[in-house]
Image 1 (cartoon, helix red, strand yellow):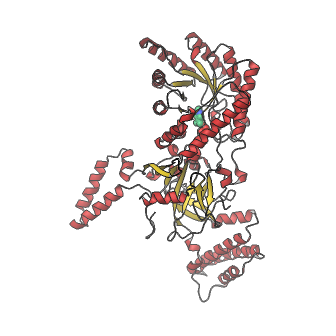
Image 2 (tube, rainbow, N blue to C red; image 1 turned 90 degrees about the horizontal axis):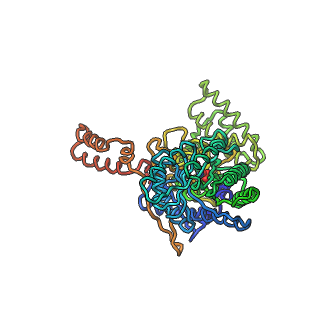
Length: 620
Ligand SMILES: *Cc1c(COP(=O)(O)O)cnc(C)c1O
């Protein structure tokens, strides 16, 4: 696996050139060069790189797929899209997104009051805003204020109570206003068809959201009574994220399409849109057998347009405009997390650590011989012999017949024999070999936090593509398991024999080695938690001008130690005072040294919490 499954997950966004992974864009800058450039400016620790050209690609691909399906089927409705803010609300992402999306009339979806404020302030006039999730009177009033500003805003009702609040707010606003402007109204339907995958709970009868058919009929009548039927604009559903198959979507589309047609035939004349929510999947797999998506965007778009066409024709209603709220698909590929490897934990198993004696115990001597003479033909037999000898030697140690040096030699020699055997037998794919790889895996200590940067790996075992930034012309040989720097044993990406990751054997005291974690742009940033007080890594936007020159913009450094404590509502001036006082009053520090220690202390307080140096001559 020299290319780390690149052709499965990268969608043509990267290339390997001269052994380094580079952007397949502009002058093909390598991620390693970009990383070094930023580090030379003094920013160490993990880095989050954002690539607006990749956001642009996702948006244009999405619009092209739907618009060409519309053309092909001569569909009468139009295509619109909004970005669901819950997927990534970070300003460096949202500003890049709104910038590259401006030709498309792309809008934002909000699921809370704070997100609604972002949507109202960032969405260009005329582009759609949709409001989902549970809403109180204030949130509904905010939507009315947005409509008054001139925004094209749709409130999706999730339950009858919300509709009643809309009726109430509408009559309050009508009293104080000469021009009765109200937001458009959408209805979220509770599908009977279930979703699929680990995020499937959004669909089905037990879903948290949406109106049952009985409630839908009641809502219709309520709107009729209160003269709001001419605001009923959209039918909405969302079947869950990272949809692995297309079949559940087709079922949901038939259900929603028939509801749309029925409501229209019942007299909802303003009803003109169907919102299919999100769910469009991203391919995160690095191994062909583990692929997560069995359909293409073209198939997805064609199915939506075709089914809506068919249902509208059959029911004799106008074809609806189609809205999507795809989030993961738009945001996932825009960011890459880059983290330095700090240390490898198999040093004890190096040949150089052997403490050979003049007279080794006979079984240890046998291990030496096995290691010397193992070859392709005898590898399996010698491997079994070595494992057997090790068992015996460990028993001899327990019984007091051999000493600690003998035991250490036993462990090193057996480990080296296993490694050699795996290498010699690498074309055979037996369970035994997989088990053994598990046993000799190399632990890479990496300067990042899985809790902060890959929470879906921690919580849901969602895989993200991982690969080194260079040495890609050298076959990596060590089965790797990654340790993050939190002191939590869950902060580990263990070696998975079914989807193995191999990395290079490196000496971090001599060489730098960086790992890239890809497709981290959706959900990971805001879900990330500050376990051990590791915060959002230093981030930067990588822009390109017309000539293809690269610009590093809007760098935001990871929070300093004091800012982190401030966020937790510690009184940082008190902490500051206490630290100073303790130095001042210590009987172990003389006057001159106080100034030195204080300045050191203040330097550390101004830095972030990721590791800086771990080995004497290694700056991380
Ligand atoms: C979360 C969510 C989305 C986004 O789903 P993705 O799988 O990220 O595309 C869209 N619509 C609604 C209502 C959501 O809750």
